[in-house]
Amino acid sequence: EDAAVINRGVITVAEAGLVSFVAPNVANEGFITARLGTVSLAAGDRFTLDFFGDGLVVFSPDIPSGMNTGSVNVTGPILAEGGVIRLSATDAVEFIETVINVEADLVARSARRQGGKIILDGVESTTVNIDAKLDASGADGGASSIVANEIFIAAGAELSADGLAPPEG
Figure (tube, one colour):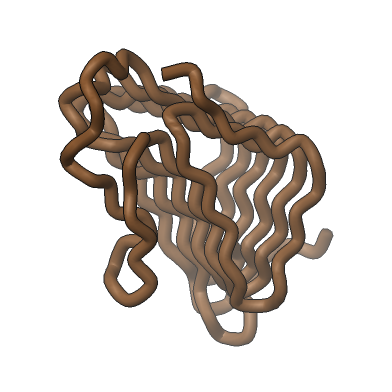
């Protein structure tokens, strides 16, 4: 229940690479870069990596009982230019509550005519808190999706997935 994967450093993967953390509690306090790649942070216990289907992380239904909460906390920026950033929580009934907190920028602007995606994928027991910039914009646009029981967006947060050229810098 207290198991966690926490990044406090700098993770850079090769172009079109993959970064995936799965544990009952997952946090990025450092910096993750995955140009044209995928960054997946998932709150769960048992899972399968699905390299060929729609979802990268597929949770197993046989999660042990007694798991009360799960969380994904982002306080360090994630940059996946032209790629996918997915923060997700299991739908196992053993999780009474899951929380996805985003307090640092998630940037998946389009690159090389390839739009980016930002997906915050919760379930009925999930609360999503956003107090940062989620940017999936670019010349071809991108996509953002937020699914949860409760979604709180702070007054200073910015969510963008437009088809305009992103600002410099």
